[in-house]
Image (cartoon, rainbow, N blue to C red; front, side, top):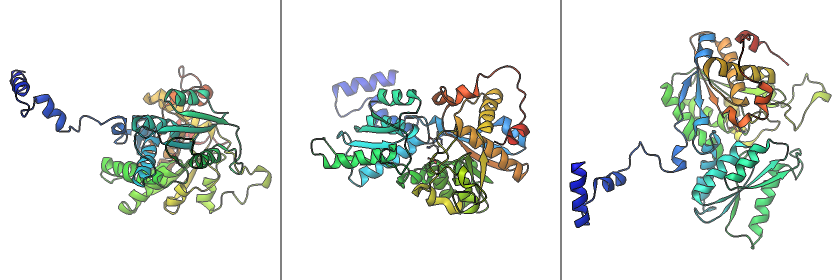
Length: 385
Ligand code: PMP
């Protein structure tokens, strides 16, 4: 303190001599993160003790819900899309430029937060059957929210098409200030690149490159493709496994090369609707982001709603880990893979978001935790719809 006082006194009388605080501010510290963007990435890798004990493998999970802007892996994606657009000259920070996106949740929340920090305005189109807490949150982050009727992807009113059309209208409407981009998380390859540049290298560092399988669901496909594209060339024996919820066509795409199981009856095909309570993963079309890494995916595991619910409850009961449905589905698949590989293998998966974002839908179904826990891991694995 005496030293500080002395330096401070000198700096008050002599402008060229800097105070200790001024010097500290100038020399950047890696213990201080710059703004909300600084809190994105470098997420912890957690050993899930109960699953590791139950399988004899080491089950590790990348805690993506600890990304600090919108609390999901979509923070990485939103920042990557925005930075790419800035570099290409389509967006100028603090200009009030518009960013349009069609999203049912996480990406909109990440975009809305980062838009505030960088001086943009987010316009989010979402189906009106989604939990209202998501649209409430978006409004409180200062986004414009347009709720549209649920519609298949072939319909121009479908939320992704609506957002694309809004962006197109904007760029031809001179009455609107600034410029606008369509973020386009499903097709924009800045999405998988965020995971290629962040999630993948971080997993490699955190495991020193020692892992046997990476397990992830796919919504846009950005996570599985970006991580696979980074890890597979560096760890040739690594297995990349898709965790796919019931009703999604990706399982069949990976297994048989077509979206629909040839054995499936015509009447049971669901072309555009993924009929599951698991949110965020599972889709019935092949996006650019999925296609980018598709050939690197070795196998797929089907996860039922029942299994995802049982796993979500298990993770709270045994580990105090409170997550959403896609994280639970990932963990079901990780345990299936552990059983296939046998003990003493290391499997990495993703915990995408917290259960707090799923209180009104998924966790209402999953119920209240407490009382006697009578589900075994073998029972969870044998739950098929
Ligand atoms: N979990 C949640 C909660 C999500 O919102 C998403 C993205 N829709 C995913 C997982 C899947 O990630 P990706 O889009 O990278 O395939």
